[in-house]
Image (tube, rainbow, N blue to C red; front, side, top):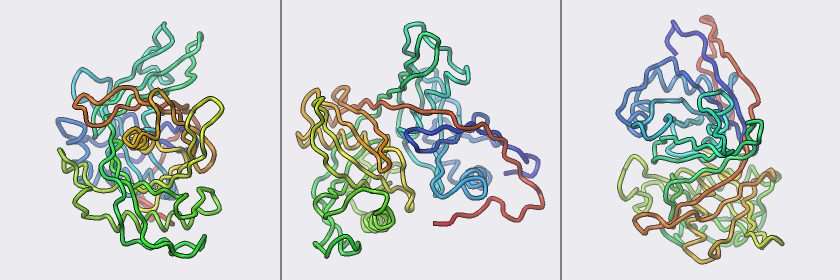
Length: 349
């Protein structure tokens, strides 16, 4: 942060338990003709990246903090843009952040609620344009938000890594971890946790983080992790561990997951872009029946509901729609004391 800017105000939300820190007026200009271009400029700009670290690192944040800088939209077709960030950098997509932003847009008065009870909030993100449909009660209070994601697809199934599942103490080794590569606005490596006797619970989180890091590292530079159209979107963003829990009495498919993204960061929610990626994969394999919804549960028991909204325009994959809630938890003004040695801060992981 430049020395003349010693304060920055944020509005903090959580979506299904996952934090999202919104900076509505970043104190540093972020140039670029599009949000995707702004992301690359933000990565290269020491001042912008310093602001990210200041708000994410301790003592002002923590290793699992997440947030976004509000920017101009790419064009008049969207309401605003956003640069998503976490402790290790700037991500290409964020579903839980999109849900929080839809809620914030109405809570803050940036967008007036539609009298119909459903208000469209169109947001440009680095991976494309997404629309949050914000549902309100007769008094105008937000009740739920669903968002239509970018097109999602299964990239490759049964990709063998050189990671040995014997890393965990849950069970003896069953050989190399096999993953599915999926796209949900970012590239994920999906692990069938049941296959390896792994249970997605808080008690196993330390081992799941370690294994997720190993899987991501093993796939670095893998040719299938290169985005087909935009190299800025290449590379595995995170590892998703999935337990299949059968079918609910409602007929919905029920699964539990934890997404370990960036460098060992843990999504407390079921992960928005990860859930979108799961819809793409489950549709491709036929595990998700036509018209069936997925109840995607997080490691702390919170839930997203998702389903196929439509086929992708180019016929490659599907466009998912995902629903949850977000809640405001704080408005904060962070101060930088010029004599403070802990700027931008530190991370313990």
